Length: 614
Image (tube, rainbow, N blue to C red):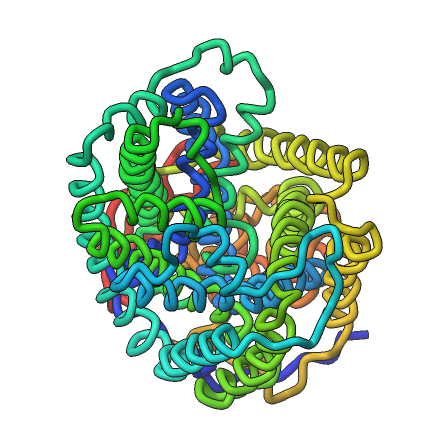
């Protein structure tokens, strides 16, 4: 008995798109270059071997950061949807991973807005050095934060924090409501060059301060013995992983807005090395300033060095107090935090907006409001109070260490070993990628990345289970740390069980009005149908499909293009083309090309296909 067919979709999804590769690169760099580049990388490098840290850092970039970035790009670009929809289209069983990524972004976005609000206020404070001679005491008064030992949820609001957080959310709403091109792309095209110029000026000013060389020597002087320390390598991989915005939906979502004939691998290399270049620039600026501070106060660099909130809102104001033209240094530093943080926050919230749009079939404005309004209320209620700093601290630690890392580990394992979709993703990347991926990429994604993620997860969990977290009450940590990380997983699974309505984008063509690519078939290379133009048109190889386990072949998949013979039926009732027919003719030449067999570095096409440049 024939299986009832589902009517082919005829309506295109209205999701928006980047105007070109340059717009995408600016937006992707804007996401990757965030607060962690400025206040986390310098101290991480200094504390893990100084100059010697650059060796594991570079290796981590090449063996985990960029390979996982390519995975995100391939999933988003091939299946043209938000995180939940793209994972669902790759394989129905994987949808929960996409919702997991969305909920991680909900948590991060809620507290990230608070840090951005602090940075806005401190940019204004820099003009008058309002923090006075004791920046630590001033920061305590500014946040009115409870001591970590007594951490609990309070409803004592701090007016300055409340106003700042509301302003941040208003600005986010405006940018996102304008859409992908007019909002995200154009704001990134302005803010990222401005950020780079401001930070270069800051670095030039910092390296000309007396004692700057002391800090730079501390940063770059190599301690080669640290290379035998496993924790140094874990720190390097952790820094790369968190700073590149991989594996929690951002790059996947941005890639779904790209034109079809985009060089994904070349774009990924630009973004990866640009991010690392900015981190190196941040290290120079920060440690030059710390060297000045150490010299001016007669202390060692290790006495003044700090990371995170302590560096930004305590150490740097102290530096600004001592530095000639300190007001300029302050405006440049905190202004850079604002710009870097804002472009990152935009990308974080866009993951949620895109998911809501796809699930409910909403337009850009209504989708933005449906996300920003409730998130801004949650952000204000939780992080503009006297308990906000402690809640931010524990939430940030657990959503990163046990949210992002675990989701990345599960997602990578699913792609590599359960769905076995790496050959499909590889062939998609290689169609227009100037940097072809092959065996090395397969090994790094399937072996290196999971091992590092598992090691990171084990070390962090062991430490917290043994020592607690930051002296906070166990009830507070268990509720807003472990409890929050677990709740995100449960809610993600429940969301994945909800059906997609007829008005959702799951039942529409892509934004160009083209059909969506078939689900991934395990361990199957791709080949191009006759007259193909886009990598989304690559289909599973005929011979491989015939040999596949019927259980592994998604129902309804169309194999090898439009010229398949209806009387030729493969596993699971799937139509396949007749043997002997040409399966991959290059446009305009008639020359046949096959996608590379798994495990090879061969390219899919020798020349770019002709046709429109969608």
